[in-house]
Amino acid sequence: MGVVALLLVGCAQRDNPYDPANKGTPERPPPPPPEFRPVPGPDNIVIWPDSAGSRGNPTQYVGGLQTGFGQARGGDTVWIHGQEYEIKGQLTLYQYASELMPIVIRSFGGPAIIQYVGTSPLDDVCLPIDQGYVKIVGVTFRNCRKAVFASNFTGWLVLDSVTFDRNYSALDIQQVRGKVSLSNIVLKGNTDSPPFYFAKIDTLDTAAFVWMR
Picture 1 (cartoon, rainbow, N blue to C red):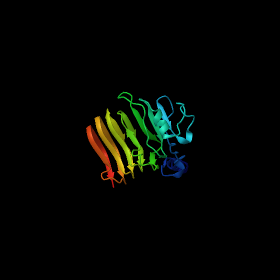
Picture 2 (picture 1 turned 135 degrees about the vertical axis):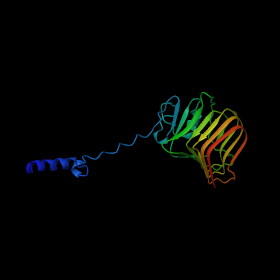
Picture 3 (picture 1 turned 60 degrees about the vertical axis):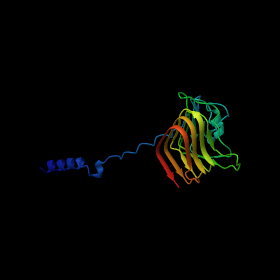
Picture 4 (picture 1 turned 180 degrees about the horizontal axis):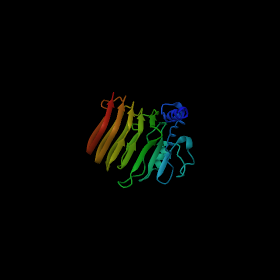
C-alpha cells in the first residue's frame, strides 16, 4: 500500500498545473514584424535621404523632395521616409495624372514632416496642386504661409491623415470640377482663422476633420 500511495502522489504532482516544475519553458513573444520598406522601381519613387543613390536612376533612392516630386508621373507612388524635410521654396508636380493612373504621395516609417524654412515673400505656397487625381497620405506641413493650394482642375483630390501644424493658412481649395475628399485631417496652431478656404467645389467630403487652435 505504501508503494501505491507514493506512486499516486507522484502522479498528482506531475499533473498539478500550479507546480512550477510542470510549467515547462516559457514561450518567447514573436519577433516584431520587419519595417516596411518600399522598393524603388518604375512606379515607385522612394525619397529617403540616408539611402539615396544616383540621381535619376529609378532603381535608386532619392535624396530630396523636389527631385522625387519632379520625377513623378501618372501611376507613380511617391514614398517619403518618415523624417523632417526643410524646404526653402515651393514643391511642384510637373507631370499630369489621370483617373486610372493617379499620383499618390505617402509617408512610410513614420510621418514625413515638410517644414518651410525660407524667407522669400514670393514663396506663398508650399505645395500648389493644379491637377486632379492626386492623393496625399500621412504627411505633415509646417511653417508654410499657405500649406496646400489646389485650384482650377478637373478630377478628384484626396488628403488622408494629413496634419497642418503652425502654418499661417493650411488649405485653400477652389474651382474644382470634381470631388475633394478630406479625411483624418488635423489642423493645429495655424494662424489664420479659419485656417482653410473652400469655394466652387462640385463635391466636398470631409470626415474626422479636427481643428485645434
